[in-house]
Length: 209
Length: 209
Length: 209
Image (tube, rainbow over all chains, first blue to last red; front, top):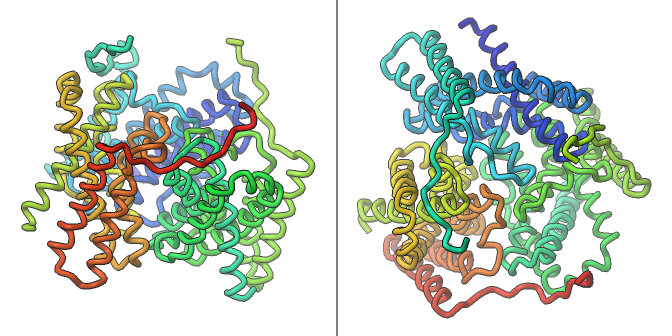
């Protein structure tokens, strides 16, 4: 992939994640500032955490104004056109899956480039993908959706991260490796949504019920 | 401003923010340790986040014992004299506005000094001002007040941060610039409280109601 | 203490904390991924925060795969054997007190080694001990247990951290100092559980009741 294509896709992912944040903000009746904050948090929290852990100062969200601008654009669009955004919920979910795939793969790649052990890099790649959604939910005091029954969201991010790390370990060419890893993550997430694949919940009966 | 005046004002802001944290802790029936934790978090979380992002190790809250001591003093006073503190709620709100103004301006200034891009520095300055209050609310699982309808709190911090960054970009003398920026933030917050100025909420009707 | 013994005890603490996280995850009906996330967060969040503050990149939880492996093992055991784990609740509470003591002492020691001021180092040592439990509770949007009435949990961690810092300041031999500090923390926590020692709550009557 060319750098231009990569950075375009990265901003597409940022936009999709920001819309998921802004949407939740509107639904929770936050004011304009609250909606924009949720847009920014959903789009950038995973990457910020990764960059703090690997020691990349400042994190990209604070060093490159395009992330902020993209998240603000998504927030404003959602704030003033909420009902239209709700109507294209399915396309948004597809963009979100694209964002998940790109963030997980790019996050793993960045962590490896900073010399993090592959196990840690995979973990950080997965967190790059799912961290924004967790921050988004926690800011409005909801248990993060990704921790509850949801169609293989974290598992898809993990798959992309693992494939990237294996490809890097085998010294396969970086661009095709990243493409295949991201595609695998996207396909798994897509199929999981279509077919309702979920992880199990512990088989346990609450004695107080 | 002389360094002595600046650092005195900084500790005044710390004290005011710590009182807002401790007050919430008492109201939520936390124990003494919980009340002190909320005092410390409200006074320091914004600055800690900023320092982690810009790579200032350790953050001031852990490197300078006066922040901890000031926050603990505010926490103990509130714990043992809660009803008296509640009676001076209006003065506390004024101190809080002073703290907001100082933290936003000093935070922007510190981020610029660490070489952060002006857009990122403004964002970090604003977070320096509002981050403590967000941490305080999240620790007792309330949606941060600053994200909901509140009289131009984040906007005032943003105004101070933007003015400081513009002044710095124009190479105006630092001390008067900081003073004007902080004063503008304080005045906007003060007027917003007096007149009930708020940001809009999205105009949207919940179809399930 | 030999390094082998120290690192074994460190992993015992990790395992005990991870079980407390996974147990809460099962009770909250999280899916397998959610349960493993809570196990990891409970075991590592305090240390991650400390390492970010002192500038130790990457934090141990991401640089040493044994922490992840230990937390995952505890999570899987709890997920599939929840009812058995519940039955050994008392032993788990004892392991948790061991983990608290070790994390508080080792955390203070690491912060001092990174040149942090003793007051900041004690604070970071205490946070190393209690931070995981706070993250665990916040992830399922509960007010952290350590902030509410609980048998001298943070105070015990603080005692261990203070003793370690005093010993280090007096240049006492490191290994016996660490042992005594950890033992004091464990004993205080143990006695507090047995005898129900707690911190006070502010004496205040809610006028709206």
